[in-house]
Amino acid sequence: MQNIRNFSIIAHIDHGKSTLADRMLEETHTIEKRKMREQVLDQMDLERERGITIKMQPVRMEYHAEVSSTKVQSSNYILNLIDTPGHIDFSYEVSRALSAVEGAILLVDSTQGVQAQTLSVLELARAQNLVILPVVNKIDLPHAEVERTKDELVRLLGCERESILSVSGKTGEGVAELLQKIVEVIPPPASHLVTSGHQVATLLQALVFDFAYDTHRGVILFLRIFGGELKRNEKLRFTSSGKDFNAIEVGVFRPQEEPTGHLSAGEIGYVVTGIKEPGVARIGDTITSASKPAPALPGFGKPYPVVWASLYPENQNDFVLLRQSLARLSLSDSSLSYEEEASGSLGRGFRAGLLGMLHLEIVSERLRREFNLSLIVASPTITYEVEDLKGKKVKVYSAVHFPDESTYNKVYEPWVHINIITPSRTLGALQALFHEHEVEQTGLENWAGDRINVEGLMPLRELMRNFFDELKSVSSGYASLSYKIGEWRSADIVRLDLMVNDEVIAAFSRVVSRRRVEHEANEAADKLEKLIPRQMIDVKIQAKAMGRIIAARRLSALRKDVTDYLYGGDITRKMKLREKQKKGKKKMQARGSVSIPPDVYLKMTKSDLG
Image (cartoon, rainbow, N blue to C red; front, side, top):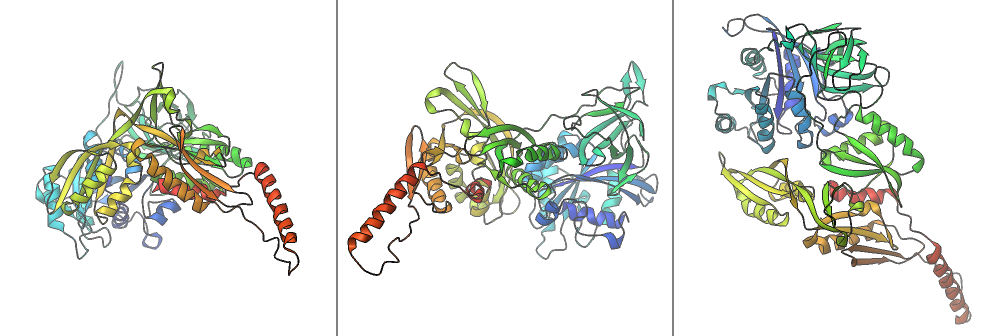
């Protein structure tokens, strides 16, 4: 255990975590040069296309350290790295990774300096009492401001300036010194004694910090061994559910799975369980021996869904496939929750709980790619708490189920604590944006150079209403944002329904602020009018809220020129043909229905997805 170092790389999005991990794999010869590629730890096609990390990925490296330092006792070390996502939607992934390590590399881009997500991931690492190793990245770029970035880190961490390392994830400069520093600074895993009547050091305790799913091998658990030893074919037990299973295969990540037959205390690896049913494996659960069970380790709860979105198959025959696909997806994405629901116009579907707008995009895209599903995604919403006339409180997860104004006393909504780091010249535009999105500013701090750190409170509803995109726009792309869920407050909001020929389209319903209801209604009606193709009948589009129609638009029916083939004759003949067409259209208007193409649902939702 003295020769093991478990650590993670944490940073703001696009600060170079995965690229630095690539250089570490090269420096330690974990991957051969001919097999090396960019973002080698990002296994999903979506991660590689977007250039972001979505799912954490562990890897084991063998490193030969210089023994000249008094802090290095041996020359051979095992380095277990967990590469983490940087986007704010996946901060739950970061918190799980940090629970399995003793140290964290805090990586900061020298061209951007400390950003909002840098502060939030640092807070997560400090909560786990991890050793923080500050590192400045991208020093090879011509506009890098290394010294200014080090000033910010000294101020943020209160550390010695000499302890901050400078590296280039692209060229590999400084990576060898960083590996040596990891061995010197990050502590080895502590010996974990389990109390079970008396202190016993051999009882198995392993924390499940993630899992994946394989069609043939079932659930594959990602484990950190805190005590004892885990062997292949051993009978193991989940402490929360009490379910037993056999360890079909045990191994480590290099970064591909490599069977070793056993894992010892302090190591990070995987176990193939053969389990193919959802709900058995849980993040934060403890794995122990079925014959000699040990107490559970302190884990962490299920993540709180930030956004709810309804997913419907374009073809109702695909409903069962959608259910199976969501079950499969939840086996590799533990933060996804879902339940069945039905809509009059869209049929049967599922309401999915997600961690944010990017998470919604990733899940819907994976369903399309991996399971060949064509989906209709309804307008995303958040959770509201409604107090009815009798004082009873109920949770509302979907806009279409939000009650009419006369049927409740109060509505409560979640607020968030936001942190924005932006150039000081944008403060005026930022104040206007705050007014538009109901932000209460709570703090303002000047940072090094010309940047400021602004803290505030705002409704989660407003954060989801394109706040991030508008923030980037007013700051010319320089501002960064992080947030965390805060308290619940009473809200002045109403339900806005869009009706097509007097039928409420559930997928277009949304909850909006009362003060913006007219603007939102007109905007939605205008957009729908442009998107719906003209039909054989007149299409009436209406936006309704607070018991009245607020906006109305009309699409005239497609009409054939029934007199086109006539080349003369009495005018009465033309009049007869037009009258006949008029009667036919009237009959069609009474019986006909409007067909809304699936891409209209997607385009209407796109504005909400940002």
